[in-house]
Each structure stands twice: as structure tokens, then as C-alpha cells.
Length: 414
Image 1: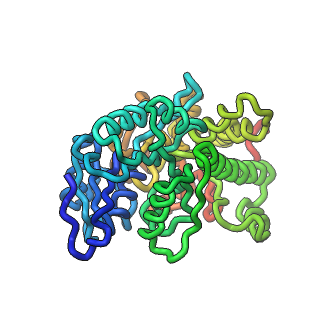
Image 2: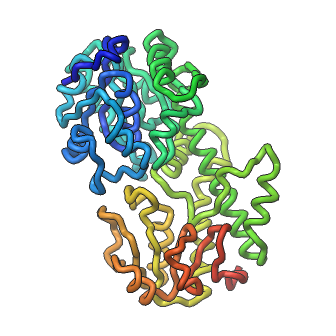
Image 3: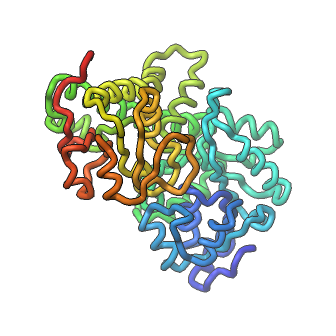
């Protein structure tokens, strides 16, 4: 399965890497590592495999990061992809697992079945490889897998990658954390550091549980920061104050900073909500109140925004590009909860720019023509200001502090 490494990479030819799962994390990892090492990639979706082998990104693969798409198409990469896991992992020194772990409300746990099945198949095909989990997992998961599969050759290396910036963040990692203190763990950490564009990258070797906790606490802190500035915005809106000026004054304190402080319709995205819920579940036997508040804050924000929108008494609410920047993972956008809440109040919803993925909104209309969208909507929700809507600014309702919104007064009843 592995390709022949070019002469310029002979010094790395003895290290072969397999990457299982070519989503946001897996593809960025595969492309990063293939710049210096021989990489075999595997995904169950043939279109992703074809994308890697053809070195061409198209809309069907939802590669929202231009830098990653450019690297895949133009960089000198030693990589082959397949839909066959056995072909991919055979001969690999390290097998990286980057399959999805969605949160299951029924169990209050991340769904880790795909990881466990991949570990089982990998060790059956290549019992001497080192399995490196890159997906988000519960605290204690690695220890459980080591017992289940009777091996210590399973380690955890959490990723800290932003959606649509995964390749950039892989080239410029804030830190490399590996949940093991063995020689293979140190070797893998150095391998990632050698592939980074930055000359010095902090490396931290920990226990498996500590690495799992670092990932969950990091994302829960980010979710808490989102919730904080959303509630700051709710306060400003309720008292006819400028959200932008308050945030600027708060952020000028260097201990707080001006980054990651923009209010939105809620805490969306694939990672932050589910990781916060998983961390809360891990606190079952530990007293807490803040973790619960972080999880609850999203619904509080939605309830407040719904009351603000209803004050305008719209009949048809338009939602501009709820798919975000990459056109992927519609079901994880912040707007989805807001839309469902508005539907419960009997409002008709029309969406512009919906991604080509399934969603559970049967009573929602989808419009591909921007002019028609502007005409039919009484009020237009827009997470971030855009020039596309300048001619209907009187209809635009946004919580983007950099722009203007038709909302100026305190919502009725609040």
C-alpha cells in the first residue's frame, strides 16, 4: 500500500504512517505527515479516497480550508489512499485513528464504537504497530482499550485544531500532547514536531487520563468563553448598550485579550458542545457547578434570542448561510437550535446557502436564489455581517458587534 519514498525523503523512509479517517483532522494530519513520511490513508467514503489519490479537492469533499486544499494539490506528498483498512495499516509503524466521536444523549457519553472497531481491525492486521488515537475520547478510554485488547501499544495524542484551519494549526501547533511516557510516545511527539513549520513546539508527555482531560478541559474552557461573551451581548442588548465597546474595554485587559470574544447565535461547531457535555458527564462523582452552567448556557442564549426576534413579529424568518464557511456539518451549527425554537413559535423559516447534507427540518424552505431569499424573508438572521445583504439592511438581525442590526431596544418581557 505504501508508495516508494522519493530520494529526498530516504532519511524518513523507515517510518511509515497510516491515517484512518479523512475528515477535518485526519486529512490535515495525513497531508502534514506526507510531506516527510510515507503515508497510507484510509476512509470509508470513496470520494475522499479519490480526492487524495487525484490530489484534487471538489465541493463534494467539503474541504473548507484553502491552505489544505492547496497543499493537497501542489505539495510534494508521499501518500496513497484506500477504502481497505488492512491495506492501509499493513507495514505501518504508527496508525493514527481520526474517526468521528459524536455525543450520544442517551448514554451521556461520546460514541467511541468506530475507534474500538478500528483498533481491533488494526491490531489484527498489524499487531506490532503503535495505535495513536487522535479523535476526542472520554477520560479513561485508553486504559479501557489497553485492557480490552491486552496491549500497551495504544496511546492518545489529542488534537487542538480549529475547523477550517486544521492544516494551518498542524503546521503551527500550540503544543503537542501525548498521553504516554514511553519511548514510542516520545518518538511520535517528535515526529509531529519535526513536521511543524515552527522551529520550537512545546511537547508534553502525560498519562493517558491526563491527556484525555487536557483535551476536554481545553474545549470546555473555549465553550465557556463563547458563553461569557454571548451573555455579555445579551446584557448589552437588554440595556441598549454597545456590545462592541464593552467587549473592547474588557479585552484591553491583557489577562483577557481581544481574541475569541465575538458573540454569536450560540455555541456551535462540531467539538465544543459535545466535548463540554462529555466533560460534564465525567464529573459524575465530583462536585461542580461551572461545567453544568457551560452546557446550559447555550439553551439560555437561544431562549433570549428567540424573545428578541419575536419582538419584531416576523412571519417569515430568513437564515443567511447557516452552513458556515466550509459547507460541512450543518447539524452542528449554532443556528440550528435557534431555527427549531423559532419553528416552535409558528414562524416560517427560509434558508439561503444550505449545504448539500441531510437535516431534520422538514418544514423549512430552501432557496438558492439570493434575490428571492431577500424578497420572501421579513427578517434575515445573519451570524456575521456580509456585503450580500447591504441592500436589505433594514431586514438584517445579527449579533455581530462589528455591524449594525435592526435590534435596538430591550426585548418585550425581559
